[in-house]
Structures are given as C-alpha cells and as structure tokens.
Length: 126
Image 1: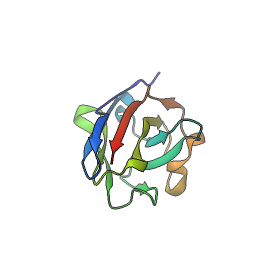
Image 2: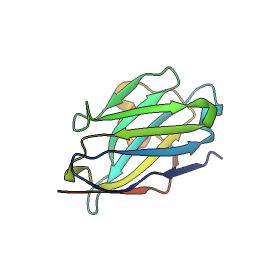
Image 3: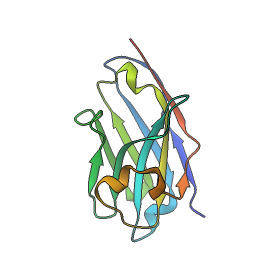
C-alpha cells in the first residue's frame, strides 16, 4: 500500500510563499501520477497541480504562474512550491497518487487517484 505523508503547511501573509512536501513511495514505481488538491469547508476538493512519470505537468488556472509542482526521486518526495499567496488559497491541501500514468486534465481529477495524504492546512491572511 502506498503511503503519503504531507508537511509544510502553515500561516503566511498575502504575497508570501510556502513549500508543501509529500513523501510517497509511488516514486519507486515506473508509472505513476501525482497531484495536489485543496479543499475548504463546504466545498468539494479542487485539483491544483498534477504531474506524471513523464514529467508532464498541469495547473489549475487559479494558480498558474504562482505554484510549481516538482518531485525529487532520490527523496521520494513530491513538492508544491506556492508563491504570491492570496487569501483565496487558504485551504486544506492534500497530495494524491496512483500507479498509473494520466495526462492533461485527468491529473486534476479526484477520481483519478487512489492514495491520499492526511492533508496540511495553509492559511493566508490579508
């Protein structure tokens, strides 16, 4: 069973930056998809960024140019570098993985993933 452990959330002022990390054994697989999602109370989980084993990436329009998804295979870690943070970015952030290669918009869909982390809270104040 693939386990995911997230870290890096916290409180920051608008305009600030945070880096989320997700340690995951999925990176030992030859084929995989990984994504970052976020959720606020009363709303569904929203895809933020995704990446597959070919290095293809995709971002939600709301974070393009501000967030960067990346991975470190040597550390079995998925990252989400978040910059120019806005109060609307406040949410619980989750990493997700699946041992299958998806591309394009599929990487931002919750139904594409079978493994989920416990979430890390990001709070951006104005």
